[in-house]
Length: 292
Image (cartoon, rainbow, N blue to C red):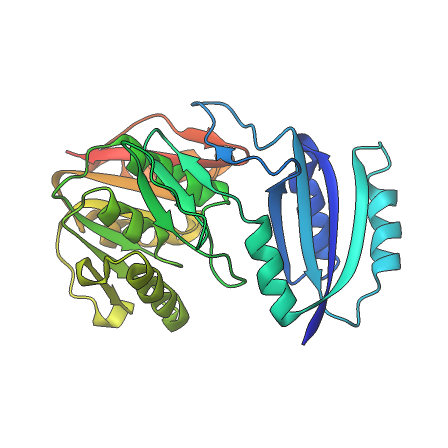
């Protein structure tokens, strides 16, 4: 199967709006990359920087018209914030190689690096996580995942037991073990997510320390750290279940929350947790807390 791949470059302020617009036009996948092929460095607290010049890359099915997409896009963004339009037909095998070329090493905190296969490096005092991009699950480029990776990199989790609630690609579970966690338990409603998690655990040689479960397979227990990077609605609806997974004085990290949803989510957890101020990146935020 082949795809239309289109890309444009914009300033960081327009990148999210361009992504949303391309999704509305029917894109099957949209991602952000550095237009200058520079690694991603996590922003400081309160900073929302992505890249000064951001390349937005989208895949469309072959029945889409790149000419129409271009016309609509440049009409929508007529303030000259979009430039360097490029379109090509991409075969599946070529698509995989192209994404590998675009996916650059990313740094989270002081000690965690995420590398695509074949690009990993040994850096003194750092941990390397190998992860290849794909259509179905995240690679750390989205703010919600990046915020969680940053938290893991900045805390001492040596010997801790971790639950990754809504694991997706398993990147948080794998990162936790690489950073010193005793073991990680990854839960997701999608069987494909568990396969992706197992593959990533094997690729990073931590499969013996990561267990995967569908919700009905998981027998609840209390862990030292619970990471829940899902969305505000399930975080609210499942607040009792999630809260009960955290041991006394344990830590809970919630993500997948839009800035304007932070207060609603916090309200569901504040009776059992001491919640820190929200950490914001772009439109998204992370809530960190300690169980009372």
